Length: 94
Image 1: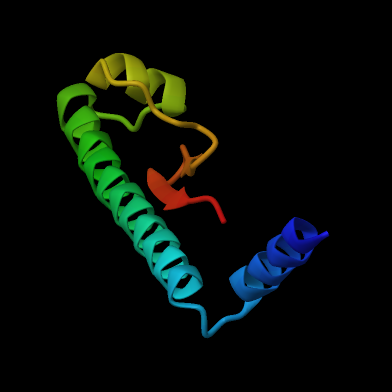
Image 2: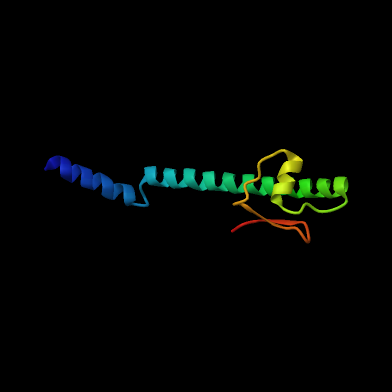
């Protein structure tokens, strides 16, 4: 019974936003997400540069992300990016 009460008090304290461990965990998660978003923005910039390079090399825009992927030799996460082949515009999906 005592173990059950101690376990419950621990679980309640973990949900308390003033708990230092909880705050630390939230900070780590926020930093991870921020770093991931930064990486996505950098990937977007690199892909935009690849579209420009493709256009210079081929006198046209890539037809789709698959064609750009073949041109660069790099795998493109098509779940993260949208590409408009009529304008050459790349954006991050929301």
